[in-house]
Length: 209
Image (tube, rainbow, N blue to C red):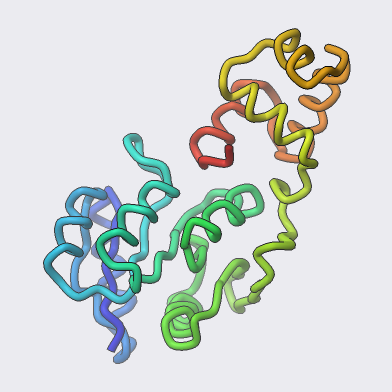
């Protein structure tokens, strides 16, 4: 039996998890928490095998959530249940300790299969569709947008998220200001964002830098 803990702020979603997963005799939803603090309190006193969590919280990033869970129990597998684009966040979250991502459009049978594979065979589920799972175990060579950034682009991104201006970045890296702007344009294209504000949010909210 695999003991599941759910985190989602929506009561309907929490109830839905219990309903759709009750048909699988190897799964047991032991608790459904409204927020992270409630979930951590439960983990501190109870046996949990797999945590399935919503991705977006106003007060904590996914990476920090993973770290807090692993501090309490490093054996818990962490799966994120989301509509967000995994191409951007998969690498930093997998490296932080997440073991999978499930689409909110996924069928119950596929979800159950993913949970079973993650817990029983220690597999990373990094791609999923409505009717099938695809596994991608090569975290160090990711096929995703963040993984396409060059080392210099990542340097520029770090300075940008620290609030540095183009002229400051150019001076620190000993490059032309126009080159800094070129790097910014490339990153926005690779990360599929349309403006600097979204670029900052993407980097900061997902702890990419």
